Image 1 (cartoon, rainbow, N blue to C red):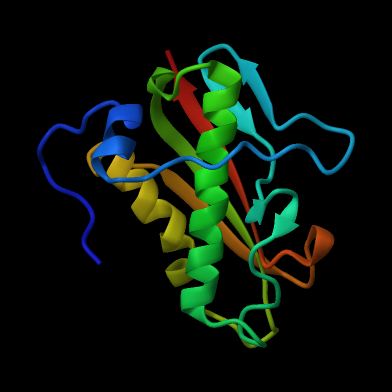
Image 2: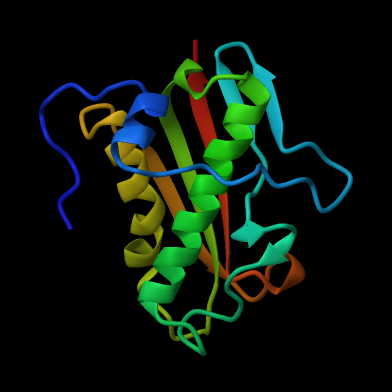
Length: 161
C-alpha cells in the first residue's frame, strides 16, 4: 500500500483530522512506570499496547492464531495509542516534529517470518502523518510472550518542538 507523496504534510493534528482519524483516550501504565518521558528535544514513549479502556483489543500470537492482517491492525491501534500518549503529555500533537525511531515487538510462533509486514501497520500511519520524506528508523522482532498476552508492543521516540 503506497503511503507517501512528495507534497508537504500538514501538522500532525491537522493531518489526523484530514484523514478522519480520532485519537483514543491515552492508555495508562499497567505497572510502575510512566508512559512518556521527555529529554531535550526527544519524547520517549514506553511500550504501548493495542488496548482500549485497559483491555486488549486483539489477543494471540502471530503465525499461530493471528494473521499478518490482524497483527497489522493491532500494531496500528498501538500506534494510535502512542499518538494519544504524546498528545496527552505534550498538550498539543503539533509539537511533534517527526518520528525518529519505531520499535515493534511481536509475540510470534517460532516459524513466523513476516515481521516487517506487520510493523508496516504503524509505519504507514506515521508516514501519513509526518510524510515519507521525514522517514523513521525501525526495529522489529519477535518474542515468545509479551505482557498481559498482547500480540504487539510499540515503542516510539519522537522529535519535539
